[in-house]
Length: 271
Image 1 (cartoon, rainbow, N blue to C red):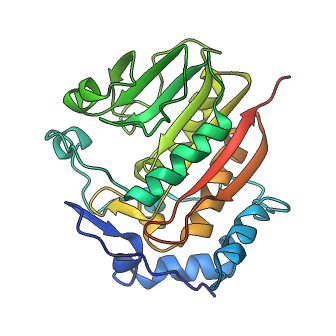
Image 2: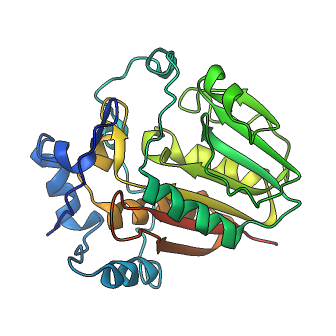
């Protein structure tokens, strides 16, 4: 049986927590999860306990032998074209200052200078630390005005991954692929994660950073009936079923106040 950590409510335009809407989902989704698809306990208590749970998540993940998701898991309240929803630029931060600082600190520890980085589902800000000196940063997002304002991008592409999950980049083009608080909007995650593998260089790293904030209308259904630890497990399963990844890790980088923040990382196999 699941225990869910309540999200911290904050007035960000259009944003709500997955938890605040979870009780409105049909009971069927919860029964499916409790029946054994992803059954794990959420640890309440100290931040260290939470961090330990994330660190141990993929020690023995026991992924099902085949893709366990159904089409209904990727349904959304608003199934209209994403281009309509994202027509108006949103020059807001989708996570609070503590979560941003935590992510920047993680990037600072992880990213090497002189590298090529692809920022998926990019926007007007990429949260890259000022000291990071890449060779190039390429953005792929849905709103041209937001991407134009992102000073860290050397170039960008406007593309709806839910309509066309094929990246317009050559094989082995990037050392890093990042995706910040957006994986929960992907309706074709398996195809997207296979593309992440394709465009990464051997040994390159994918970094999926996630919190519990979301645009309720566009988040996938399974996300709203699961908690942060389960979200990390779902992301890890995307890497697993896409194939060709190793060193799968989850890490909670929350600072103990404000919005939670965790990352799931994997590297492309060298052979």
